[in-house]
Length: 215
Image (cartoon, rainbow, N blue to C red; front, side, top):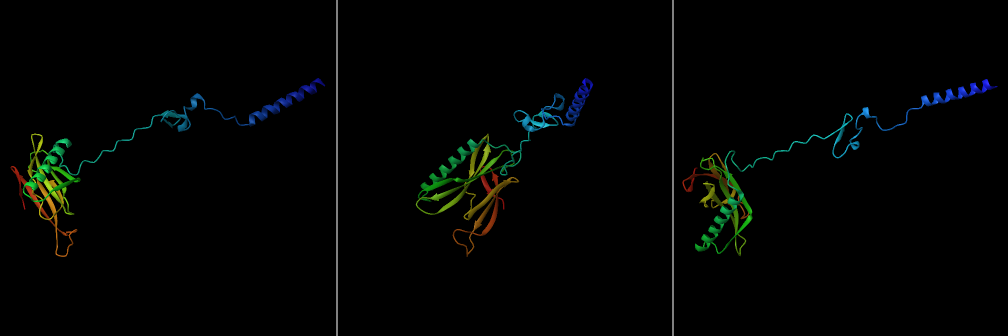
C-alpha cells in the first residue's frame, strides 16, 4: 500500500514537472547581457535605442544661409549703422534742397520702401552703395522714387550722386562688373498714369566724385 502511494506521488510530480517545462517563461526585464534598451522610451533624455544601447542622436548639420544677392563677392561693406546714417543724411539734404529751390512744397520720405544694393563701382575692392527711396509730395497723391549713390572711402560712405534716377519711373538697379545699371519704365502713348510699360536701361560708372553715363 505504501509502495502504491509512493508511485502515485512520483507520477504526479513528474506530470507537474512536464507541464512546467511546456509553459513558456514569463516575460520580464531584459537581462544585463541583453543590452540597455529595446526601444527609444527605455532611454533617458533625448538618447535613442540603437542595437540595444542608448546613444545620443547625431546632430543635424546647420544649413548655411545664402549670401546676399545684392553684394559683390569679396567686397568689404561698411556697417549697417554707417549705411543708415549716410542715407538718412542724404535724404534730409535732398528734402532741404527741394525746399530752397521751391521744387516741391514739402517732401515726405516713405523709408519702408528703401532698397539697398552694395557692390564695387570703381574697382577698389570696397563695397559702394546704391539706395533708392520713395518720396511723396505733401498734400497730393503724387510720389516718386529717387536714387542715391555712395562711394566708400576710408570706411565711410560719401554721397557722389543723387540724380542718376531718370525722368521715367525707376524700376530696378544693380551694381556688377564695375558699374551701376539702372532700369527705368517710361510711358507709351496708351499707358495710364499708374502703369508705364516701356523699359530701358542705363549704365553709370564712378568718375572721381560723380557718376557718368557709360552708354
